[in-house]
Image (cartoon, rainbow, N blue to C red; front, side):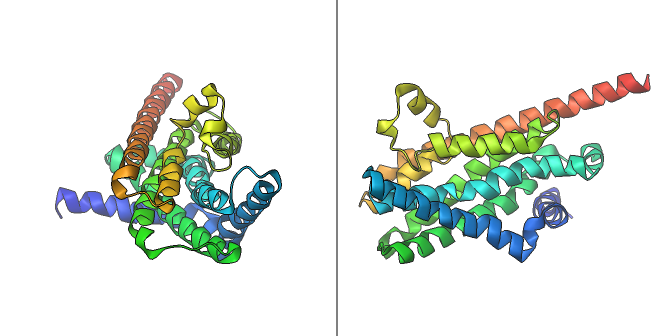
Length: 265
């Protein structure tokens, strides 16, 4: 078997086995309740808040919360991809593996990218039907591209937070804080222009924020050339968070090896 084939096998099969072994989301009731029902009610909640306050129309909140719905699987999944290995006692075997770290951890992210993509698609279609919002077929290609980039960006953001679980005892605190920050800074429910300057600065490095803007421009009739800068910015965030995640994981792995060596000595 070639090196490339072994790498692909590690990414695909390794990620799938980890997902099936560590996550209750593979149980249909938990998957539906956590990843579908809760985000769907979140869309309806903010739509009705928006109607009451008159801040924006229904489509504004539908698009924002559709993209934000992926953060449930991507952020919590990325964090638990590391923390559950630790909790279940299998992290040591992962860190002792001689395989390259980039495909090993990248494979852990893929199932959550897929989860996020499917959840966003379901939220958009279901929310549009329930709210009576038209979805033109001409935007399907742009929607798919935006969903994919946003899911990748958010999943690697989750993995970078997951790296902290090698040092933080309760990783759920980290994921809960991150989810709250995404609601505040992503622009899903508050227009960026309505934010103070410091919040706008934070929003520029918040995952999914550029994807939300691209999707809104697309549904407003913008061409692909107009949304390309936002997609490129979201892709740059994905690369940045992927790099940060790998650096943190590598650093904490080295620290754990050094500490273990000291304990043995």
